[in-house]
Amino acid sequence: MPEIILIQISGEDKAGLTSALTEVLAGYGIDILDIGQSVIHNQLILGILIHIPQESESAPVLKDIMFKGYELGVNVKFKPIESDKYMDWVNAQGKPRHIITLVARKASGTAISKVANIVAENGLNIDMIHRLSGRIPMNGELIPRQACVEFSVRGTPQNLDLMRSSFLTMATEEQVDIALQEDNVFRRNRRLVAFDMDSTLIQAEVIDELAKAAGSGDLVSSITESAMRGEIDFQESLRQRLATLKGLDESVMVEIAQNLPITEGAERLISNLKKFGYKTAIISGGFTYFGEKLQERLGVDYVYANRLEIKDGKLTGGVIGDIVDGPKKAELLRKIAEKEQISLQQAIAVGDGANDLPMLSIAGLGIAFHAKPKVKKDARQSISHFGLDSILYLIGLRDREMD
Image (cartoon, rainbow, N blue to C red; front, top):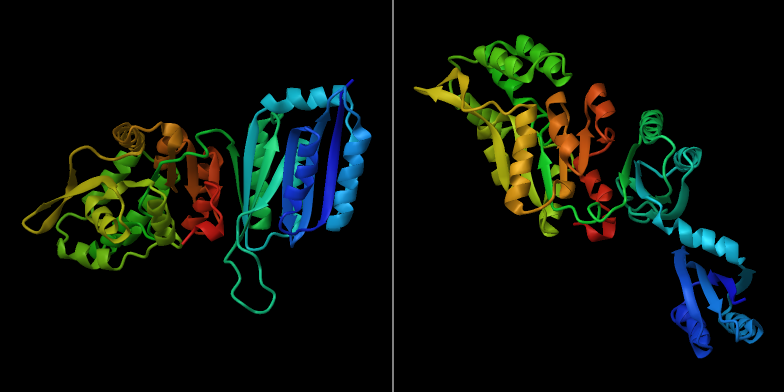
C-alpha cells in the first residue's frame, strides 16, 4: 500500500524555510496531498501531508527531511495516516463551511472559549482561526479600537437557529458582536451595500427633529418608537407623524441637515467600500432632502426615500409619491441589484427598525445595526456594540487593508 505521512514542522520562522523543505520532497518526486502554514509571533507551524508511492521507500525521504530540519533549526515530527482515516478526510471535503466573525474590545480568552464551545456543541470543527485586526503594542502606543478574530468552521450545524441564538446570547453577555455566515462564493464577492438612514447612517430620527421644531416632539417620538418596534404599521405611523408637521417652515430642514450626527464608523466604512469598488445606497423611510445631503457628504451612489410635499415654503404634512415602507425597501434593493447586474446574494443591507427586515431578509448579508430586540432576533446578523466600520470585518478585510 502507498504510504501517507503527515510532516509537522515547528520552530522559528525564517526566509526560505518552506522552500528548502519542499525542495527535498521535490527531489524524490513526492506528491503533496495537503499543506498548511501559520506564523504567530515569528513562530512557524507547518504541516505537509505527503503520498509516497508503493514502489518507493519512505525512509530516505524522511531521513533527508529530518536532516534538513536540523540544519534549519526547526523541530520535525512524522505521523503515518491510515488509509481509512485518509478517506474519511477526503469524503469530508464536501461538507458546508461557515465563517464566524468575533468583534470585541479585546480578544479575551473567555470570548474565544465561548465561541469554540458553541461550535463544538453544534457538531462543527474549527479548521482555521485568523486575526483580522491589527497587532497590539505594549509600549503605550495607540492600540486598535477593536479586536477581530475570524473562525473558519466545517460541518452541518445540528440546529442553525439555535446556534445563532446561542451566539446572540453570548454577544449580549460578553458585550461583543458575532456574525455567522455561510462560506460560499457570494460571501467573498459582495458588491453592494444598502443602508437605512435614520438611526443607522445617522444617530437621529429626522422626523423627531422636525417634530421638535413643530412642537409635537413627544407625540412623534412615541409613534416612531412604536413603529420601529413593529407595533404599528409604518405607513400609518408616518402619516400620523407627518400630520403634526403641517405648516412647518422649510428653512428648518436646512438647519437640521447641517447638524446631522453621522454614526461612528460610517465615513470610514463608505470610503473603504468605494476604494474596493462597492456600490452604496440609502434606502430610507426618512426623507430625500436629508438623504441627498448625506449622499453629497459621503459619496453614496443611490438615494431612495420619501419626498416631503412643500407649498409656499411650508410643509403640508404629506409626501409626494409612494411611501417607502418595509416592502418598498425590499423592492428598491432588488431594483438596484438588477440595475447593477448583480445577485441579491452579493448585496448587504443594514438597518435598525422593523421596516428594514424585508430588505435585510433578501440580502445575502442582512445586518441589524444597534437594533431593537425584535429586529435583532429576526435578522440573521447584528452589530450592537461597535461602529458601522465593523462591517469591513464581516466581508473579510483586515486592518492593514483598510484606510
